Image 1 (tube, rainbow, N blue to C red):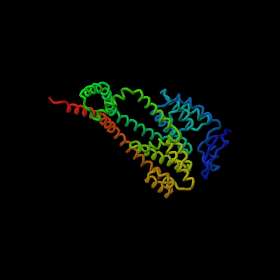
Image 2: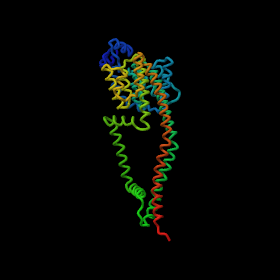
Image 3: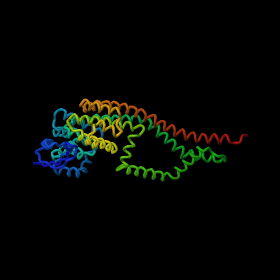
Image 4: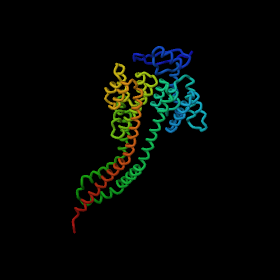
Length: 407
C-alpha cells in the first residue's frame, strides 16, 4: 500500500505533518479528514524528492503566453465535460499539431501516474507555469475545484494578454516619435552642436545658463559615454540583486503598489484575485484558515504575502475576517463592508463572489485608463525634452545675435 507524506491544518488552526498509508490519494484525503485534518500538501513518499531534481528537464517544454492560455482553455473544457484529469491530459497529448503542448501534457500525465499532485506535475512539466498558476491549481486540488480554478486562470490570462496587446498598440506611435526624437537629438548633439558652439564662442560673449548647461552636457556625454554605460549597467544589476530577495524584494513589492499609474492596476488585480479565490475555496468547504494559507502561497508579491499572513494570524486568534482585514489597513473600506455583510448573513462565499465581480469591472476601467494615459505621457516627455534643447540653443543664438555690434 502506498505511503503518502502530508502537511495539514488541524481543527484548532495549528499545522500537522506526517505519513499515512492509503490505497489512493482520494483514500488518503478521506482518512485525514476523518482525523479532523485539512491537508494542503499530499504526495507519495519519494515523489517530493523527484520533483526537486526534475526541474532541469522542464526547460525543454517552454510555452509562450498564448500556449499557456490555450493549454488551460482546452484542459478546462475537457474537465468540465466530465473527463478525468488523466484522460483530459491524454487528449491534449494526442493533438494533431506538433507543439510543446503535447510534451507538457505527456510530462504532466506521467508525473500524475508516479503519484505527484497536479500542481507539482505542472511545475515539473514546464517552467512557463508561474508560481501563482501552480499555487492556484494547488488550491483547487485542496478544494476539489480544479476546473473552476482553471476557468478563473483562463479569464486572468485572457485579461493580461488583452492588457499586453493594448499597451503594445498604445506604445507603437509614441515609440516611433520617441525613436525619431532621440535620433534627431543624437545627430544634433554630435554634429551640429559642436559647430554651433565654435561659432558662438568666436563672439566672445557669455552664453545663457541653459545654453552652457546643454553644451557641458553634450561634452560630458561625448567624452565619458563609456563611464555612463558602465555606471548604468552596474546600477541596474545592483538594483535587481537588491530587489530579488529579503527586505529589498519586500520593499520593491511595496513600492510597485504605490506607483502613480501602475500601482492602482496592481492593487485592483490583487483585490479581484483575492476575493475570487477566497470565494471559490469557501464555497467548496475549504476552511478559512486553509484558504488563507493557500491564497498566501499563490500570491507572488512578498509584501502582500506578509499582509495575508497577518490577516491569517488575526483570524487564528479568533477575530472575524472583516475585523482582521481592517486591522492591516490595506484593503478598501468597500471590501471590508461586503465581507462584514457576508459574515452577518452567513454566506461569506457569495458576498466575496459579488465583490470579485465588482473588482473585475473596476480592473477593466483601470486598464482602460492606463492604456489611454501611456500614449500622451510618452509624447509629452519627448516634447518636453526636445523643447528644452531647442529653447537652450535658440536662447543662445538670439542673445549672441543681439549682442553683435550694429553697423
